[in-house]
Image 1: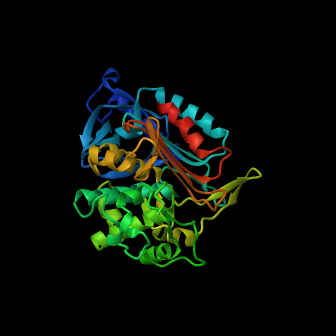
Image 2: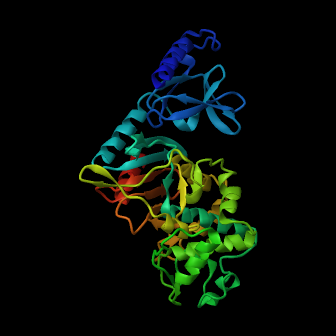
Image 3: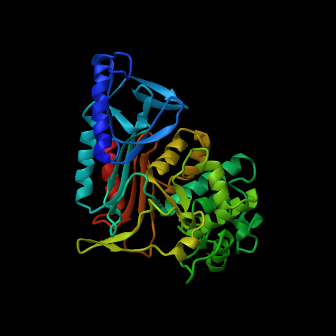
Length: 416
């Protein structure tokens, strides 16, 4: 089937260059040369004039001629047929850039046994999406850009944004006391929303989980309340409990579930259709977790019981393209103003390195999500320059021979 569709593309391009019944008689000198810069064999959508999508199979580095660059429903599109358009974000202009970029990326990934997806973006748009290894090794199902990965602590950035939106609406402030929502926690009067966001609340909790999965969001909050320890020591101490409590605060302020608020305020507005809470996953396109051992994919399944405890802090699955949509929306001010985002994500003091879900290092911000009790499996890294102009997103479903943050940094240099 793929060969037929690719053959159609070749025939179509031939017809295009000859002007046979597909368009006005554009000469090649008037056409725009573009290179498809997406993962090999991935079924990307083309669109008609009304913005209705249809599946097509166009391999990465395929060279096309576009008639013009236009806009459909606010999205920049190249017209490649009489009623066929492709998003500008899936292409690079010219003939060689994509090949150079992907070759350099492949060289970096090859030595690490990385398995998963890598997305690079530059000039505020996706420059490449590449897939490596298997989503399901036993069934030989390869990873693809629409494969869903557990994003671990990257979910904290979503929870932080929801809190910042509620602050903007005046429902609370960064200085609001935890006691307003959870008065029974020791020292709650001395703990602020800002301190929860920045892991300076004095709360400690190991990554413990029950024998059987918890049922529902409130059960996850109750589990956290039962197992946390509040110390009145406000030095930085990273713990998932802070963000479970923030998810609980979101529930209290909105009278809705965390999942409902996440969908209404982020997923739906950004048209993120490839994002799911762990217990609501579809039957297809979900990556399984592996450890690289003895040159083989050894299954390393993530505990459903653990995921059931990680409300708002690590039980979200997502495709790499949807994750990129969210991250770039922050810098495009689609979810909040630049000033509000800076207030959320920039540390308040020079000696602090973490704020609102993000680590800050030099001219970059980054987040790293991994499940501590598992030697392999899911791993997520985002590294972005301080302007949001360029960066790398890495979603893995297998352990690597090197630190994934180092791999992400090496890949980051390709677009900086």
